[in-house]
Length: 391
Image (cartoon, rainbow, N blue to C red; front, side):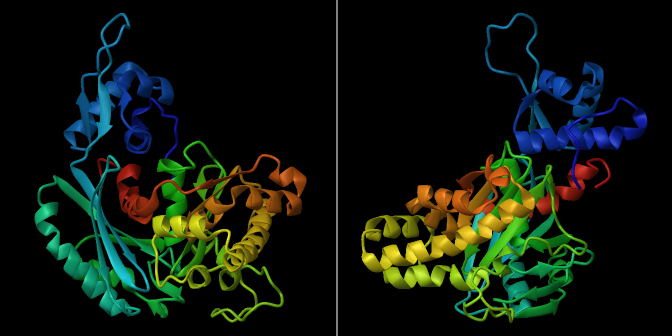
């Protein structure tokens, strides 16, 4: 649920005001009481009462500011509590990753459990719950664990968290969310991984100052995307919006596992890049180095140009449809952009409607390996931000 940046002095909207203040220090970082007063439009006494209540709930902490030359009593600094955490889970085709993320944005732990094969939903639940059990000693050191957020590489029904389709995981209509909740005892919420990545970059990464952005991620499970419109995530009627990986980019292309011809993720994929580089696997840093070192190789240069061409087609379509301020590229797409940033910019400028693309910027995702952990945790923190006193 989006939280407004403006408050209201009426007592009947105390819950809204509590959520507004908590969201500001959670997503914007530590803030002086005076800054909160100015930003929300609430008076000082109201902010003082709200901060006091949030502190009593253990959701924020106050500290004295550093030395300054300003005249008068300095305003206390309010920080989201690092002692309140959420668990993040990301099932992938080759591993299950579990993280512990603080309300202040700190990634306290990240455990990647390789599977060696594509896990079934039941296996993913068993592995995730076992890893979480192994973290319970660590979790006990925090004051409060809000719940679990899951970043799924597939379509997740918003109403009940059922994974309708995760093609690369070969999951169809799997009640993964309820299964994990039953196995761990923690309240669990699930959503598409790229949509959560868009949210994470919007609040904590490259999109901090962008109200309209498209996030496109490339990984072992294909290409996914999330769209932010006027500050709010675009979800669609059931939560399936943003599947740019399955947009047509080559009418003479290969058949995709979804059944269509020439989808983006059949033409632009990590496996083809690794193959031409002679690598079995690589993380984003290793891929950066390998592409930079081999960019002069004719076969590598040809593959880079081919993938940039088809990626530009999809980005052109996104630019014309959504008119975003920013397109953020994550995963191997970030590495692909990094090796030839001017080329991708030029391709889109040549193809997109001039009016739609004249304000467009392209950036690489900033959160790196933290991205889906932060995004999944944000999903878990959602109810708390909406109702700090009642959650």
